[in-house]
Image (cartoon, rainbow, N blue to C red; front, top):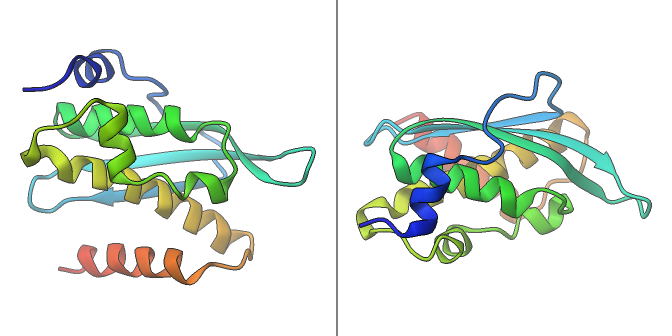
Length: 147
């Protein structure tokens, strides 16, 4: 059974859509269930020089949990520095939605992966140094796509 927050984010998704001139896009999928997520980022520099997620939108093909976790991660990441946004993980997403059925936890992992891929792609495109942990996340995503 889904929580009220999951139902709300599914029925009234926040930040749904595409950013035409996105600075980066992260796309991930789960071959087993068929869910596919795309996160679009628009990045701006803060007064301090930090790269901030100014705008974020998503397009998701999937179940209620996939749409709800995509919606929720956009709220969690918007306005955050990229380094701070990278700290958002599946556990934080699940907690912010007051839980997910165990069989749907993989959806929250997809949302976190889509965000890390979008940030990874932004760093690559802009020649920003990529940390070892972000590179490992990226390689796991790439390896899973190839299977």
